[in-house]
Amino acid sequence: MKRSVVFAWAAASAFLAGLFVWLAFFWEPDPAGYAGGARQETAASRPNYLAGGDFTLDGPDGKLSLHDYRGQAVLIYFGYTFCPDVCPTALAVIAEALRALPPEEAARARGIFISVDPERDTPDVLKAYAPFFHPGIVGATGTPEQVAEVARRYGVLYMKQKPIDGRPYTVDHSSMTYLVAPDGALAAVLPHGASATEIVAALRKTLAAPPAN
Ligand code: NI
Image: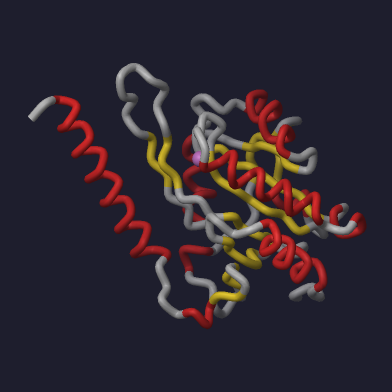
């Protein structure tokens, strides 16, 4: 086989293997668990690979912790700035949702873009990238170990790919949007392709809910 064919075959195999792993983790055939495209999470229904929870990473102005956002609804997305289309699309939809909120709710909603590519996405790179979509979205990252730990708790899968033909490497990654309630608990996991309208509905529901404690 030609080298390029071997490459394509290996890439396809790797993708399929990743897909199976992803399906094994995420595919749940129970439609009752889904509401308006978003799976509403509760302590009782949440599988342990979706523990969520607090984290501290490097933000645009030093350390950034999820608990800094207590009292606000936070949309978290994991990706990387070199991503050719998936991340920009998802962030654009998140930005559209934030813009669509009424002012008093918009004041209580934020976005955090967590880079799974800290090698290239320094806090300064992220500081220039994330607010481009919406001023309420900040970028954060950390050491590879820190990022891996947060990703594990949110059920995020990602894998750096070998560069092909001298082009910059890509990072395959799952593409969910995580909604964290004002009390810091993971409230919903929105699939890639969720519309701004669906995200707005999930945000408003979370902001309207009384504190869980
Ligand atoms: Ni991406």
